[in-house]
Structure formats: structure tokens, C-alpha cells
Length: 403
Picture 1 (cartoon, rainbow, N blue to C red):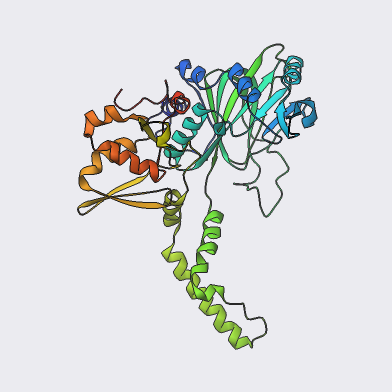
Picture 2: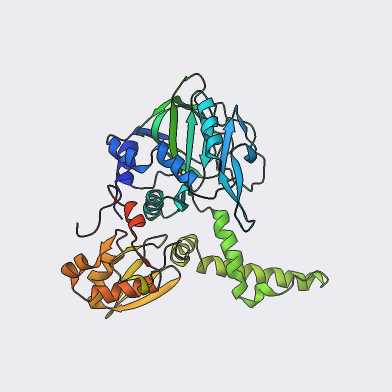
């Protein structure tokens, strides 16, 4: 999938692909501010908040460096049947923002098609799970105190200005569940300064950072943080533990009461079996299977009672694997393995490109049989019907195939 934001981020950070993720702090600026403005505006964020049922902790407010109680910005609208639905109290939200506060919306990609498409493109690029969190800070409100994240982040300043301080890690590659606490900030200053619209910053996992508008006076700041939950060796070992259930030897009870010789035999047998399992399912195999077995993301189901299938887009979390096997083409994605005739290859490459595809245009490019192929991919949930709302997430950022 070609996405303008990814190309812009690579150019800004002087990266050639996703390999530098998690390695070193980096900062740069996107030259084409049209891309940044296209992603999300502050009014669009507030409109998103207004139209959805939101709850803490996905939707939060901070003021004076402290998180506010949800009752200060949420209320429960009671339906005629007595159902209480949490909704943002937009009058209170407005008052807080006028006074100076920070609004946080986690996983905006769940609600907004532009962020959904951007995150999918980031996932195809990085081969890691990605989510987009939005931060809106007004006037001279403070942000978060110095803290570190247990994942790598790419920060794109969408509007306004915010002051940042970034320090090095005080514990190498810390984790959410770790062997030691990591409470003492590093004294190594990597960068401090103002992030302005179009600026991009990569903060590796474990690096301490803080952001604020204290002393900036009137104005605002909006940025999106793309979080990359990369897999670690601990992830691989956890996966191996699950995989071990397939072998009978690992399902047996450990011998607590046997003789020393019996226990020694069991230990040797388990060690041998574990080494065999490690050899058969190395980290490369773990990463490959993880991509192929992830179920499809949320999407609108296609129902022919609403009309014919007109346009589709691939919605797998990671790029489908397309390989030629003799006289057939094999596609592996979303936990499925599909086999097609060789002649389907041009249509498969088109439909699984990650871009929206109008079937009438696709038929002119690769032949009329592409419509039947698209229906199969939609039924198997590798692709989804492109609604006007989903299509809006691609406009100006990822072009439609054939346009």
C-alpha cells in the first residue's frame, strides 16, 4: 500500500524503510503540510468525540498535570427505555478547553476512517500492530510529566505548537511487565524544543519524554501518536509455550515425588523436546505466522440485498502473502490459505494492493472475471466493500487503483 504519510515520514526522518523503528531518537519535518492538514483537524476531532459513545480511559482529560474525573466531561444520556449511554458533555468539554486542558482520545483509528487507513498502511509498512492516539492541548495547559512508553512511537504534529523534552532510557528496552521497576528518569537529554505543524518525532521504547504548553499563552496543539507494539523475544517465548501444547510431552505433569533419577530423566527429556521446538519454531517463523494468522480487522459486511459489489479494498492487518505454487496461486492471510488458478494473479495483485479498487475499472485493467474474484475475497474477509465513509479515509492520501 502506497500512503503519502509514510513516504513523508521517511523523508522527514531520512529513513529508508521501517528498520530504524525502536533504534534511535529521530526528528524532522514534513515539507508537504497538505498531508498533515488532511489527517485530522481539531474541529474534526471534537466532532468525532461528540458523535460517539466514549468512556474513560479511552477518552480522558488532563488539567494542571492531573487526570480529571470522568464526571467532569462525561454524562449519561438516558433513553426513553432507561438505558444510560456515556456521551461527552460538549458544553463541559468546551469550557475545559477554553480554560486550558488536554484532551486524549486513544485508538482514534477505531472511529475515524482516515486514521484507520493510516494505521493499516503503517502496519503493512512496519509489520507491527499500530494504533493512533490523539492529543489536543489548549492555551497554556500542561501535558504529561516525564514518563516512558512500553512501545515505540511516531509523533506527527498536526496543528499548533507544543514544547517537548526527550531523554534517554534509564533501563534498556523496558517492558510493561518487567523484572524491575523503572521509575528514575534518565539525565541524558536527547532533545528539547518546540514541535510545530508538520514536525515528526520518533521516540524509541523506554525513552523518557514530556510535553506541555505551559508558558505558551493562548493557542492550541494537536498531535497524533502512532504506537508500534513490536514483538520481543519474550513474545516469542510466550508463543512457544502456547505452541508446546501440541506435543504430548509438555502436557504431562511435572514429577514432584519421583526419585532423583526419574526427575533427571524427565528434565533431560523436556530439555531435548524444548530444543527441538525452538529449532522448529524460531523467531523468524514466529513473526511470519503471526502476520498470517491475525484475524481480519473490523469492517462493514457486504450484503447483496443492499446492491451489487462495486468497490473493494484489502482490510487484512498485514499484507497478504501471494506465492506461485506450480499451476496455482496461493494467498495466505487472516488465518486462511486460499488457492486460485494462475490466471487470477493480476486480479489478486490488484485487489490485494491495499488501495480501494472500483470493479468496473479493475475489469478494464485485468478482465471481467475480477468481479467474481473480488466476491471470493470479500466472503473470505481479506477484502471489504468500500463504503463512502471508508473511501473518505483514502482520499488525498492513498490513491484508488486505476485512477
